[in-house]
Length: 372
Image 1: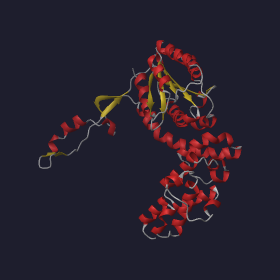
Image 2: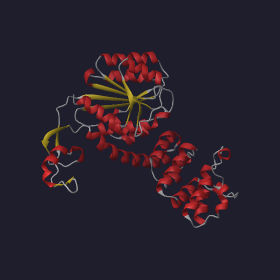
Image 3: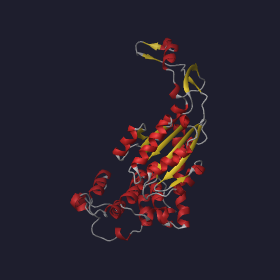
Image 4: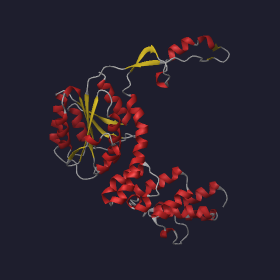
């Protein structure tokens, strides 16, 4: 088979599509790599998705290291990341992140970061050292992406006076059009811009605010834990903001001393276990110094394993003393939450603001409160 499109369909459909023609050497290797992973589906016969590569046992003798080497040779980067993600999250092939030989060769990506955080308790010190490389690489990329977005929320409001700094978000369309009307071309119905104009930004004097992030570290919240750590690091040191970060399950761990090092912070997080949200909120309430200049951000799925009545009462007391309470069912790039709606509603009823946010949206919320 020489047609690339036919070969792709053959790989998708597997053995039932063998009548389309034989695969070439690389195609057969791709088929074996796909079978090594997706052949684990117990219900693939019922779904008739794909079958193996023809009955040999070559695919089954692949080690994880062999398979990783093969997919890196045979597939584009986007496909490699999807295959690795499915291996870890769908089929729980944990040696991808617990085997030293694998960790030495694998390319870091967010799916592997999640897997490292969920399995690092299984790792010996040497493997943990190699796994840290994945954490550092992915966190570095997240920091680069999020720092600009988070810090932009604190750069001040637009002023009417012009600015020498040319940024798209500060483009002054009205003044630019007025200044360039002389370049209007009727036959083309266009104004040609020779001199663009931009707003400047002013910084308001801000009082010191506390931002207290309380992060549920149950297994389902791993994405929010990662983004909370990076968000806290981005907020750290911003003018007018003092950031705390507290992780909790049935215990409460204050990680504020590690906020400026999100890699070290994430390596200390212990995912899983039960959940006592009320205990965490009581601890957070104890950190509040000036109630009317404090924001308590509770990041959780709100499935309370402790006392819901205590949780609701503590949140009500925080709101009544003037503290902003923000309950987030998700803090990640998708902001797509799964949570206990009943508990969330009870917290909303006593004055908490409830929702789900991206880190940039949370930064904007904090900046709005600080600038008031």
